[in-house]
Image 1: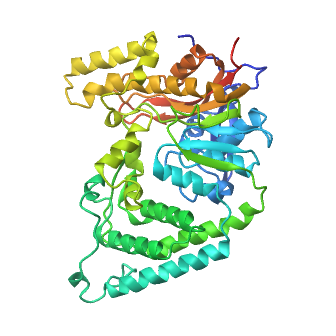
Image 2 (image 1 turned 90 degrees about the vertical axis):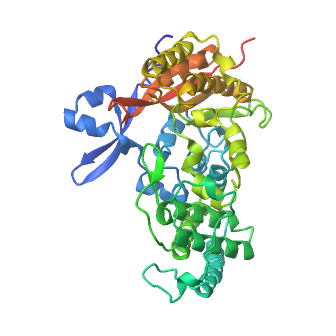
Image 3 (image 1 turned 60 degrees about the horizontal axis):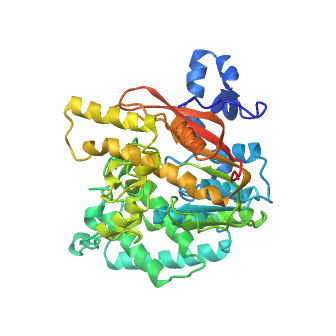
Length: 478
């Protein structure tokens, strides 16, 4: 595999990095070339290339902050590639792994039509809601206050206080609401405590009782956000887990605050041109018949990385409580629609690996992982699948890149945010280089690979690259 260029097209794609630079008492977001970076003293250089480049700027919070994955890439990265690709209102952008809608929201703010696809139903709700700026702000708040009033009245009848500081007498004499038995095993143990769960279920009943289609999605998204970041016991690191357990937490008041924050954003968003943006609930490997041929001018996206992160766990709590996943069968159906990026989402009939059966480097990496597994005596069911999931991941990406070719206009530009990995027994996977090579074999031209940031590998302490693979689709060759 040849190394992809760091810059072409008259230097327009010189390898640049998004960094947060301290200027006096402030920090500014800046792009640096590698030459610029070399001029910084070592401490500043290390500080510049870090996760701060992934932080969302204060001015970007409207709509983006309604609900966001911890690992989402920042809006300023989208703006950079929109500018570098020369996109405007006459173009259409596709995000095939749209997640919670960062690319779509930013394109809508910039007046550029966009479409997305997302297989995770919770993330699909988030993306669809974040590009819907139609609700009347006052109407949204008034409706939410009515819902909150109903929920608080019910809590009082249940002898449960919304305020954790207060304790109503005989509270424990009243049984707390629980999830159906088939739902409880789907959650991480202790991810939400019994009292906050009871309040959440009461609020969901009130939302159902007062259902209004004009506000329903925004109210549910506000609940999803507070569940994760204010109500639950979840903590986020390399993987989602359970942190300090909150015996109690306010739910209805936190939810109402989140709804009001959405309403506060709406007037400014509604003053912008009403640019089309939507998200389809679909598998990124099966898009050919979803959109018109040659209708896409650019792709800006970030697929899952090849590692042991089960992305359905990141949204499990809100997915279960909001009713998207009610059983193990629902969870399996969700996973079957996802790119195979971890061993917890592999099934017997999976065959995406056939797309890279002739790719010697990917086959070599898989063989190295399997050899290391045998040497280390690793015998668990998941460990035995490390080599296979590596091939399935890159095969799935090859299938995706082949699938979208008919949708692309000649000269379409593509930007894929990906990261190197060492999750499988510390065998290095250069994701960006491999993805660029796969794309080239499918007829794409490699413009370059830009360094977005570096991050620390938890297993080895090594700095791993996160990159943007930049491609051009020249059109079908006759």
